[in-house]
Amino acid sequence: MLKLASIATATAAAVALTAPAQASVTIDITQDPAPCTITDPICTFDFDAVVQDEGAFEATGTFTLPQFGAASGSITTTASFLNGMLNGNIDFSEIFLIDPNMTVIDFALATIPVGTSELELGAVSFDAIAGEYTLVARGTNSNGPSGFGGDLTFAAVPEPGTWLMMILGFGAIGFAMRGRKENVRRISVNYA
Image 1 (tube, rainbow, N blue to C red):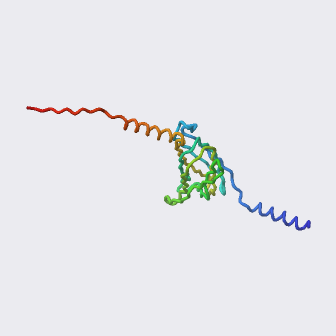
Image 2 (cartoon, rainbow, N blue to C red):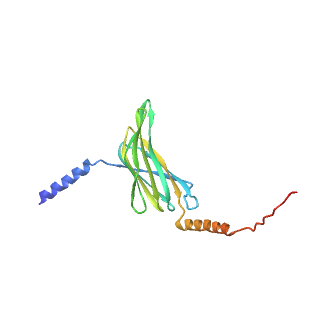
């Protein structure tokens, strides 16, 4: 029995040692206007991250949306050429958001050839709810330090009560205009 337990422990240790380590990266998220509030119906969140180490990475950051609305955004990689060679190269494996209800919203990923290199792109569009969102980007980095960045634009949608008041207001104006009738007198003029 002791022999079986030591074999299981050795196997678990071997698996743990062979699993690729992921570098942890923080995504810097800023808001414009800051802070995004109900009175600012449109705001933008800018994302920036630098991946220093080569190999697998996971980058995370959080931001808060104030109310229901529509949101869309994109993230792209950035790399520089040094002495005619590409310095830094990120390949995304996945990018997603986790909304306040713990629902995962995936970015659509694409690779675009640019000269002798490739540009990684992630794009998303979704109906947003109020609360805190977590942005997660996973991938691999090669050829030295590299980065990625992008933005997400949020446009608030009026609450249902606001829509109801607006529709009732238009109805009241229409009813008032329909109810007004002017007394018109017809006058005939004869020229001799």
